[in-house]
Image (cartoon, rainbow, N blue to C red; front, side, top):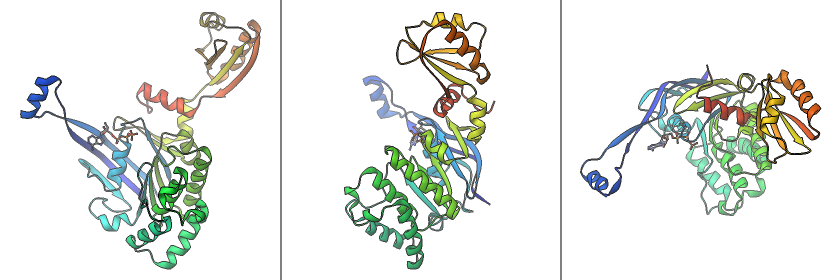
Length: 334
Ligand SMILES: Nc1ncnc2c1ncn2[C@@H]1O[C@H](COP(=O)(O)OP(=O)(O)OP(=O)(O)O)[C@@H](O)[C@H]1O
């Protein structure tokens, strides 16, 4: 069964457009001008139960607007949404008991009271039976290692500690579907690893479906087999991360550290006839060649034969860069 089904979903915002200058401001008083922004522009996709899907895009691509529609906070301008078999903004009360939501920058915990008091209040809101709460939250608290934090008021927690408590709070009613908007933003590496491991465990143990937006590609690499990529409100890629990398991330980076400074013209001349794209590194004596995988030996041997080298490194193209290239070119499906 599908946890999420979306067809031709669209959301438009009408925003006031102010005119420039004093005269413009004066005219705005009499006649207001509006422009329509299509934040989400006719998207369709389905997420199966138990999937972990990364929902990615640049700032303003329409990710948060989609999540707000999927969670029933915003009403779509047009299109069809079915989440957990329901229409999110029509069957509100029943619906919210089947989802968990974490917005990285917003808290659902009460600032001045102990974490466990917030948990108890949420338990009441969701009407979770005592036995179920004890069993399930016992596991969640252990997996997130937040036992020692439960007595502390939220304002005394570090960001990483608070995020772990936020996740636990979103799971009090053990929802089958979890929406996460930038769950690791601002966290240090260890806390990020801990949260990723927890999400994986949660997915394996309870089959929880997770839709996650993030700007951190290592979140995606660690968690998501599938990514949906959004650009200006439209889906430009929906498929596995592996395929995306295979198709768009072909080639290698060879980083040469020369004993002396080298010039672009000389390197280009040296590699004439080969498919190489040279970029200056951080130092004047470091140059990076982007080449198709099969071209590595020829480039290395030509360069090494001509210039003395201090060091040489060969890397895969990082996912962040693949994604940036796709956005620059505008579409991933072509
Ligand atoms: N309430 C609103 N009123 C008017 N315009 C809005 C509103 N909410 C979002 N927008 C506009 O819709 C577009 C999509 O915004 P959205 O917040 O969904 O993007 P996003 O992909 O989540 O970006 P970010 O990564 O910055 O959070 C943007 O152009 C934004 O300015």
